Length: 115
Length: 115
Image (cartoon, rainbow over all chains, first blue to last red):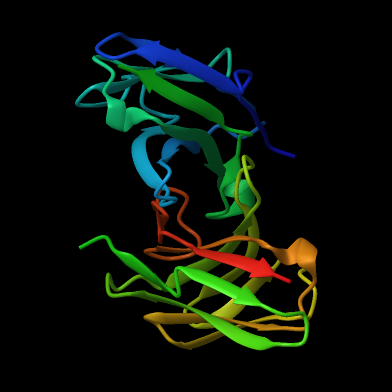
């Protein structure tokens, strides 16, 4: 079975600083997708970034980037120039061919950005 | 437009009540999902509809009854719920229910309290 592990239940960062959230996963498949979702206090889950396993280049979306280490099965999220609006729960998620489009979520990391 | 709309935002019901949650999307997506989320936990998949047919039921108790009247609308009918069913109920949609590259778009959820 696929598993996704986020080892940091809570983190904090000063505004304008950089923070990295870690995620590891386990699968025997060669093709899969990885996602980072953000859930602010407003509750809506918002896609932050997506990475396809076949692509070696790390995905980037503005201040958000990933460090995808396929051999190590690691998928960390780096947030640069942290903003107060980045305060949220962050969930790492995974999907592969065994599960169709069913997401497997990690336990989440609560990020607090401090002024 | 990547909006998934859920109503109501909040719902309080007694254990003998019957109520319904509603989810709507106009992105032309053919897969829709219901998730249950407890505080500080990741979402747990309940049901998946693909092309208006129930494709996945994750062993959810019969007091939860999903319905997909058309490709844009998803309902969750609630009857004789228990206090432990209190949670955030999230709806999501994706282009279809099989391609692993598809992104799931989430609504803001309904916060349900069962008294």
